Image (cartoon, rainbow, N blue to C red):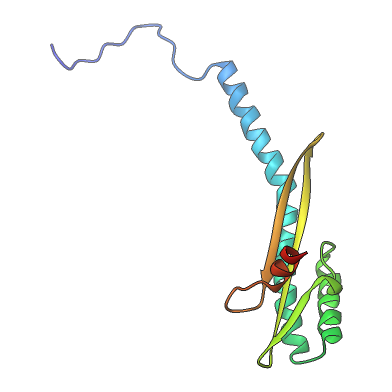
Length: 137
């Protein structure tokens, strides 16, 4: 009879203990990376929202007023990577645009670490003056 499947009685099926251990080690390593990296991305999102809020709060105010508005929001959102002095504030045709760029190093284990290069701007064109400023240096 063709097409019949034959099963052996007593045949083993399933995951071996060593296979299970390998899967658990890989999942544990991925969980470790996720736990270590998540705060850096949350801080980046907080910085982006804080520059948008500082632009809205200060409006067409002075550079110092925009920096103070950012610092106020940064204190509430527990932002330590960027301060108001680190922002690049430009005015093009009366519109105030705020940019930032910074690096964040996340230590994983021992001498292994990840380096993130974060940048953002309120400019609708997406041109980041802070990133261009650091490239010139």
